[in-house]
Image 1 (cartoon, rainbow, N blue to C red):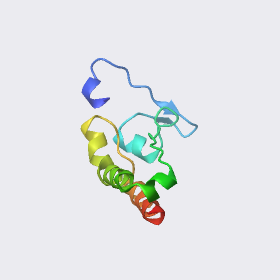
Image 2: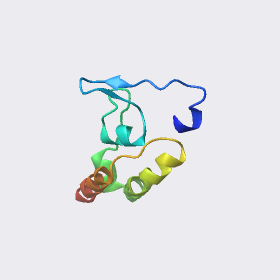
Image 3: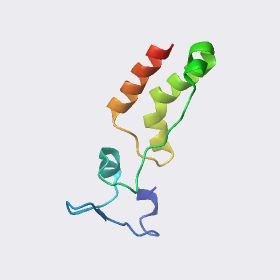
Image 4: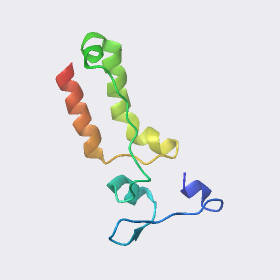
Length: 94
């Protein structure tokens, strides 16, 4: 979103004590640009994943495609290991 609107918005660097950090994909993905950036969460009941195959399928699809889809709409993806970790957790619930 920042890249698309650079001409109409002001970038606000955050200084957490180690010098100012400007918002960009790298600083947001690494967590350096905090607290003004944060992950989005989707919560699903564990029992729904176990008992309803369509819930499992949806969550798996979401985790496998979230990085690409998030960037398609102007969000910043999480580090790849975050998606891998959540997919591993999902598999333990099935």
